[in-house]
Image (cartoon, rainbow, N blue to C red; front, side, top):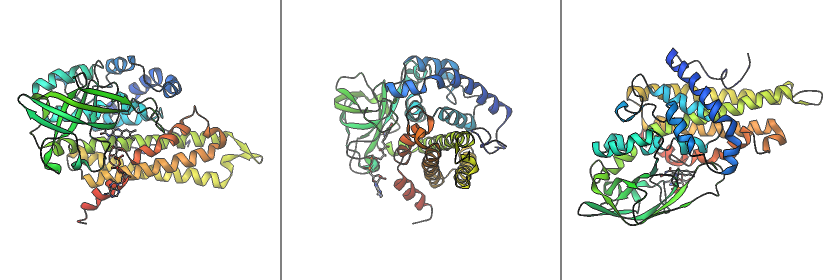
Length: 390
Ligand SMILES: Cc1cc2nc3c(=O)[nH]c(=O)nc-3n(C[C@H](O)[C@H](O)[C@H](O)COP(=O)(O)OP(=O)(O)OC[C@H]3O[C@@H](n4cnc5c(N)ncnc54)[C@H](O)[C@@H]3O)c2cc1C
């Protein structure tokens, strides 16, 4: 049996013919529209605007979103969404999903807690690829301690006046709206609310964060709010319920990240195995050296652990019984696995693995963000420990 991206995927008894057909269609789209451009987009530091329209037309942006706003919800479940995360990560371009699919974290709070008017205004153009939305929680003063955020929103008639700033915001330079955590009340989590802030309002400015270790094609930004007047209708849920709004989508985001990390680890495995089969040293193939075979097996072993855990967590999520702690531990498991696999794959590739323009180099360069963004490793462990009453 060969060991490749596809063959190293554990059989998943929950997948149907429809899921497999969706994967095939999606792969064809990605192979046609994305794969040939990966190196160029990475080096140029941005994604072409027309990609949003193409992705919308194919149906990628609307997967799992309500039909009434232009999405495809009927017959779609979490496995379809996982397949998106998996297939898009086969490209190895980590900045692609964090930008093209930034609505995956910016939009669910609007759908779950926004007014009908707000949803009707925002969701259709976003799913059509005409407008974009980001999630803005992290501040220059810190991201882990969400309850301590400093950006303020003070009620003034029919508006909130927002002052403060947000940083490391994925897709922030191109966003038309930012789903933004603000402080409307006193200290702590109970003083937090979430406002959808249009980026064209007076007093909004932004600067790019383009000197990143990885995710070069992602337009990460710092956003500044200087007496920005935001209509009260843009408040999500009730004032002071922002923590709930923010936390509501955490498990989806972390599951998606986990699936992407597992897929990235599998890319490393595939490229390492192919190289080990072809490359000869000391008169035999790399794969004929026991040390190299052991590296490959350890990669596979760790990847398989992630896959079983992903299947378990997906089932729990689909049933609505997922624990925050489980998803948090899954995220750690997957980030450690992809770090390990990126290192071992680059080791097997040798010098060529260190050169730009191959998937392993890119994944290695980008791998650290997984243990930081979407809830850092330390914060994930702390979250998981609560389930044990610690
Ligand atoms: C490329 C990129 C894209 C991002 N995209 C977004 C986005 O779209 N939207 C958004 O809102 N944010 C985004 N982030 C921000 C990300 O969520 C934060 O970086 C993350 O939450 C950590 O916050 P911080 O960087 O301020 O670190 P801090 O909160 O300052 O923490 C620094 C370190 O200390 C550790 N630490 C903190 N508190 C504790 C504790 N109690 N115990 C032990 N260790 C602790 C942390 O784990 C971390 O390792 C992005 C970040 C990056 C790098």
